[in-house]
Length: 212
Image (cartoon, rainbow, N blue to C red):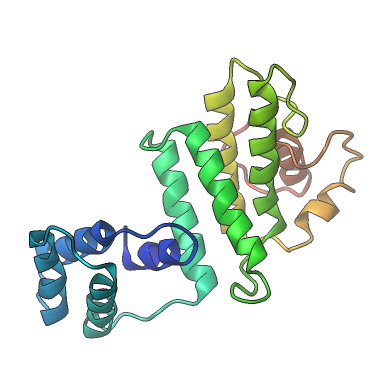
């Protein structure tokens, strides 16, 4: 992870000391031998390195490298893109990814006014509905919100939605995206599902990475 992704993860997900150490090792390999980076790398020699000390060295390293601290939105979106990449590359199981993304987006939503102003986007709600569909299917029910989802295509379907979610985040769509999309083309199905989002992007002449 780069430093933006680490900061974003620290805001919305569980941060690990190893994330800081891995970043410092990479920077050292790239020739950045600052005092704080060396100190951060040295933490790997400790049996139980302290997260507070690692975070302090990390912050000092950013200053020493002359890097700019991002706002919350930039950092969190960087981490979400990184996490989606990990899922697409097969490093994270698709169903686990749905649960984690749902938790992250719920955290962002709950802290929308107090902490993460202008970070939450309604498109993030798709993960709550997707998690509900996975639960329904686990008790032999049909998916309600993702109409194309079935017992035989779960992983592939999740990967498509992860890919599309990542793409939509990068498009900087307006906050009323989900509401406006309901009014486009008299689409009958729930616009929270994957096919509905693709249909909306087609009708607004957006460039799609793929088709379902």
